Length: 408
Image 1 (cartoon, rainbow, N blue to C red):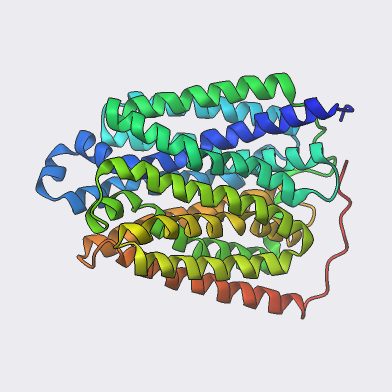
Image 2: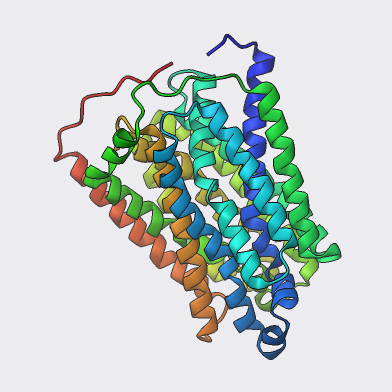
């Protein structure tokens, strides 16, 4: 990689983070606009039963998450020898095309198909861009590299998602998705101009990436991520109806609740990246404990407006604090397959997204109330912690693999 000035280095990192910003918008803006999407795409169902229509429209979230699950490891294998910059540019182009298609598709089924197409590139982008950011920062900064790229996602939740939600509420959800497509186009241009070429991993190959799945720890850690973080998505997916139907606030309050959650995410990812580089195991354990505690608080206090906002902040902070540590953990148990480790983390997070949204919608549709999703989230996060403890226990019984050199 060419020698970079400090200005060029930070411009490149910001360009990669802008892609994460776009991904935060495209993934989370649906959660604030579910009622609007349900009214537009399923008017008869919405008129008959609002909870049923919202639960069905929640498939917008679930299908996107499933696309990430499929796309992340598949693209990691196919592009094992691709230079990371070229891969990132190609993935951003995919986002532009399919996000635009999401905004223009006339039916519920076609919107679902477009969301799935966009999602195929999601996990691979975070994996490739995170590794690219780490290479730009230099050795020993894997956690920081991940946190910078995902920091764009947290910034989206802090400012972008609330603003896009307001845009969607006032001008229609389709206008919101066109704005998201414009963000991806801007990110593609910024990466093209600022990010240097970084050579592909000389040892990278489809076989090497697939070899990661021979290690049982990869499966166990992936399960801990998928189960444990689904507790967050069970809550986050239904923030809009909880705000309006449980706390009794107007739709105008939804962007402010999302902003509080986004602020928590911004704080959490910044702290989590540093914590992961300092002590990976401790960061994972603190993250799960914080997630369990914050979702419990949300379930207890979200019925009151005064409790909803701080609880949303804490849930956001805990959910993103743990992400750099989980990705670093998966890379650590998949030596020689960095891109696959990062991709599996994104797949697992989006299995969590799909599971949390689907199970949260199921308990709501069953008539248990909107806050039932929070108590479901506590149970799921606790299960993730138990799987993590089992994984750490196996570490002490299994000899550590020989370290694999990481190219500069």
